[in-house]
Image (cartoon, rainbow, N blue to C red; front, side, top):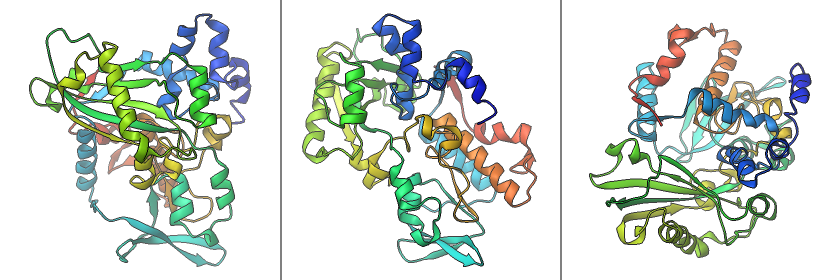
Length: 377
């Protein structure tokens, strides 16, 4: 981090992204177009460092890809590869705590205890739970010198999401939508302030409309589209009662798509509708304060300053996923897995060039691509 700091300063990469973009574009719309993407990893464009402008470069250079069969196909392929390597997966086995044993001056992870009382012994533990949840709920505070409650709670959490899933019948003359659609509301900077700082549910909203059946028709019955629309909303530091307002807000969003002509006649054509709110992220996914993307990616929580993949407190405890380095989004989560694997290999004296029993230059990508069809969209 120190080594690249001069280059970051020279490039202006430490200043807020929106400030950098505003130096190059006078048009409000262009400023929005070139700054909104950090929202897709939980960042406020007004606060994330300008280094996140790299997202545009990465997407422009290498494109955006989609696993044929959807995210479920990606999960199935990963499970298949894991089991080929000798692993086993247990479902519906909620972890109640991570077992830690004191050995001299060290605290060592020795396994996990499930909610049903069963204890599973292990040489090491890797938690892909939310960073804050891992430390606040799974590791006893007596074993934490660095990631104490005060530090974990001090870290600013990302915003949350309202995600509305729906299926609808196709009809002739449907607008020319894309697989990925960004629909920005009438306000930009003010709406971001409402979401991240004021933590209120505004009357207006922006959304990401995802229609994967445009690329992969197999995801819905013939003559239908499967879709979801994702709306950034405050996390549960707000006082929003989602049980009270969730249904009405979902109706408002779908009515907007219908009446504004994005999907005309949508309300008459819907065959399925469901939604999740920040309560789902907190209560079902175990995400601290219902955050959608782990700790918020701002300068003081980026790169080295982000939660680390190896626990500073407990030996043989590792973290993986969007809450650790390098951050949110499927590509970054996959990179996080590689970082964690290399940390484990170093600690257990395993040759880090070997992944799954084959050289890394072969194994890294084969482990990800086996059984997958990839479509560029």
